[in-house]
Amino acid sequence: MRFLVAIPVYNEAPYIGGVIPRVQEHADDILVVDDGSTDGTGEALSRYSVAVRRHETNRGYGAALRTAFEYAGDEGFDWVLTMDCDGQHEPESIPCFRERAMRGGVDVISGTRYARESGDDAPNDRRAINATITAEINERLGGLLGGGISDAFCGFKAHRVTALTGMRFEENGYAFPMRFWVQAAALRLRVTEMPVERIYHDYNRTFGGGLDDPATRLEHYRHAFHCELARCAARLPESATVDSESRCR
Image (cartoon, rainbow, N blue to C red; front, side, top):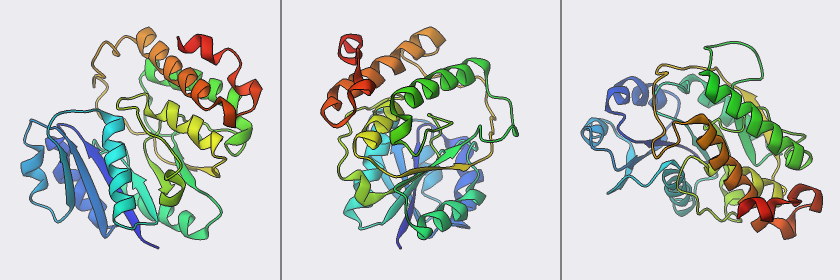
């Protein structure tokens, strides 16, 4: 089984030296997608033997994931594990994801920071929005996602590469998970969760583009979710898509 670890980065130069060597202890194949960094991230990455794909301009988190998925497919990997480079995802968990993937029977192994009450306190607005969106996903799609999920936004996630080929990725930004979960349900992918630590080093990190306002961010996620429900309506139960077309407008 060929297992790729893919790390999207944007202006992560301060974290590269503390994360990449730890990832290399647990993974032979590593891809870093540099999403248009301007802070010396590229120079920092040049010190390590990892594959790098660079976007000339900042295109967004979802766009970086799309590049990672395309690379995994083109290079013949069986699984791709995505993780952040800001220290919130512990490289020591990589073997757990790989072991679960090798056991088979699943297409998506999603990290969950809320399966147990441990680790750092999440910023109040992020935790509240995550809880709200996760509940709405479960209400609409829980029966199609292994009985439901507990952390809609965790980016520490392993994907069977062949399962990604049926997906249509057009979201470039932070709403990528909303569209991902709808498509996973529409394709009846087999989903399981894996507990991971809840770690926050920087409580002041921003989303940009007006999304730092919690109400704006929540509405943005909801809009993306309902637009994807409407787009995938033919492959989903009617109960999952009721009112989604009107809410997408």
